[in-house]
Image (cartoon, rainbow, N blue to C red; front, side):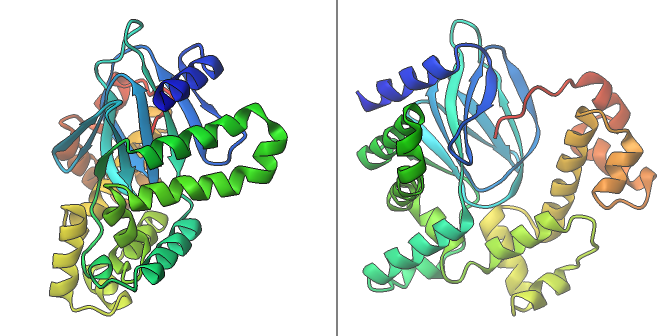
Length: 296
């Protein structure tokens, strides 16, 4: 019943197609009524919960398709392709996007580890890239309680942080919790490196620089990075840059502006690598794509 209540709440607040922010910081509601093919995107640490329809996220060629039976956790910044290829007026994609606040997630992870006696297995493994988890009772009730605050400004102001914390706790304790705890807990060097890279795309950072930054040998860092993201560090940086560039081109920037914004010094190198990844030159791709409001 709780899931149906969440669906009704979103439908009431978003009767037409669109992506809408709410009074809850980091919480957006969305409705998509037409098919959107997978296009380049950059996911931030996020939870995406679907109440109707299906959504796709593609990471390094691996498809993650999910609907109202599972929610998606992205525990770190990642270059992906995302779309809603089956959305329609008859079966709209309806859901909610919740940005995860790193500080809150780190604090909760530490509290969980302390309460659990600092179990070693929570720290030894690298964070998973993307995780799907079923809607368990804890997550469903926490999401409903969070969204119900939108109907009462006083409750929202007083209880908002507490309800968000409750939702984050439900994610950490759910089936995707291991991926979240590894990304935000002790020993999260790879997730930290990814956050640094995503914020410094214009800098020329080498594998040796990254390995030295986290105190690992080049070989160990390379292996652990690939285990966490499915990509090598160099492949990851290239994908991040090209995805950001593709998004900028789709939003109206010129090819040269997009290339420069993500750290490319050579337009010809940018065009070669772009075409290798997307099968079209940047200009061809920009002419073919009209970017809708982007969903995480």
